[in-house]
Length: 219
Image 1 (cartoon, rainbow, N blue to C red):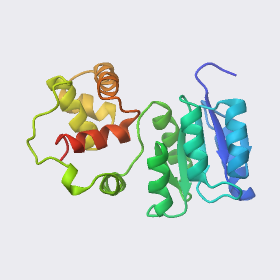
Image 2 (cartoon, rainbow, N blue to C red):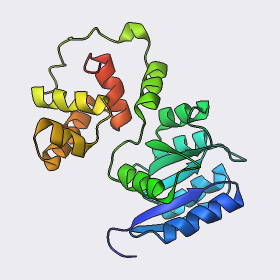
Image 3 (cartoon, rainbow, N blue to C red):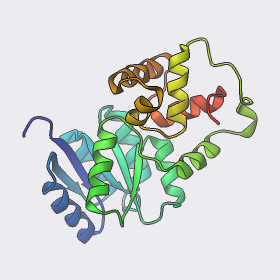
Image 4 (tube, one colour):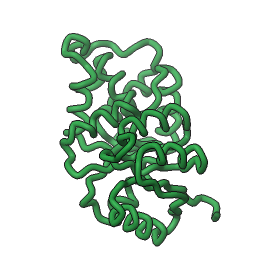
């Protein structure tokens, strides 16, 4: 395997979809499909065996659905990222999968460039959430009473700059966008993000957004 290649596991119970994704990804520069699964239990088994960088996870599969498979993989394989596949972006299972640890989602009508971008974005440690989906996820995760009013001081655990970066994360900006908006380098942003994760104990950007909401750092 060439250095820098992102290893992908494809999980979908529809043969035509699964085989189409495998063919597409194997023709994409920098991506390699290491296995393909047709149900949730097989997905977990193959993930344990191959330890892929990214799993494209269908939500509706026999034996075990994509939500439960996502929960197990995220718990057992800390370096594996999950992107869920759905027919409709407002499918309630999307939110359940995101709460289970998925890093983002794709609708099944996504084109090749969108799929490739999603895999590379999530592999780089960023979340792939539309602002409207992010808002709905937060509304499900937080009761209105738990969100402090705007202007609440940021927790002492974070520096002023880290709090600024966290606000940008909560607004849905990528590391590159944050770097441009704050006039700092992308490497500096990544350092701040790592510090935020370490200090607050959050696992990923989705949890960081929840943390920001709880501490009045998100509008």
